[in-house]
Length: 95
Picture 1 (cartoon, rainbow, N blue to C red):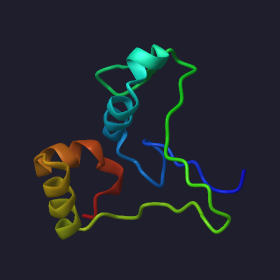
Picture 2 (cartoon, rainbow, N blue to C red):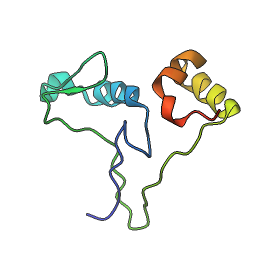
Picture 3 (cartoon, helix red, strand yellow):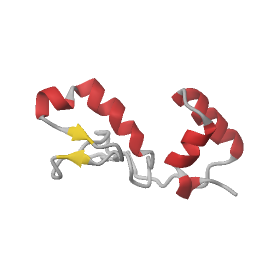
Picture 4 (cartoon, rainbow, N blue to C red):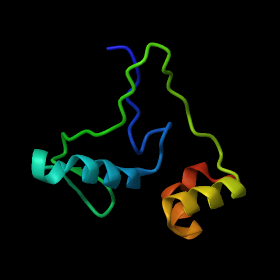
């Protein structure tokens, strides 16, 4: 396998709530018996989910500080409030 496997909650995509989309798209509860807790932990605890990019030039990266305009744009695209995004990405907020 040549590529990357970034996962929600890790440096390249720190927003744990994106697991909800993956679970919904794949019907993880129905097909694999997987569930998410209110804090986005996966059950059973040995569960994994992520994005899989099979390309030899794919590289991991770290999401740096999110600027105020980026915060607003992400909230708009995610269809949630800026306060929600602040709660989801506290370590990535630019002061």
